[in-house]
Length: 190
Image (cartoon, rainbow, N blue to C red; front, side):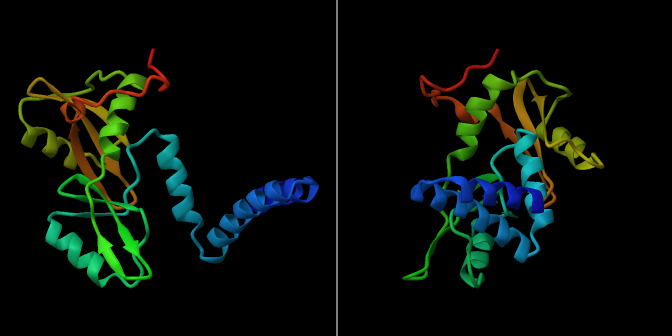
């Protein structure tokens, strides 16, 4: 952390642009926040998640919408724009601090991720199952599952995912991205 702070401090101090100084100060402030709030481990886990090419990061998982809404209602300071899972569906946490309005709208981030990810990592199943229940049992039985792997369930491709920060395992069908087209400038897989 100290080397990174030193690097950004040097960059900030050497630039003549006030705008660039301001941008670099934001990086420094973020690093100071991580350091002063003792979130080194959480930040490190987040970086591992990103580097593994895992699905969009989530901060909590709920079986029902009612459970999620109860959590959101009673949370003293909900995180803005964080994502949560409700019955393995992605939802965004929205909190207007001025009005204290709180919402959980559906997020399409998983669909976008899957559409792009299948281009980067072609869906070749590492395991096959006759039923979703059989695949879920297999995923649950994994002592330390991979962050992600492709599996086949009754002939359909799924992404088996482990969200270690919340200890949650999920199976996402690739069919959920039908109808979504990658933007023309999106990187294409090999």
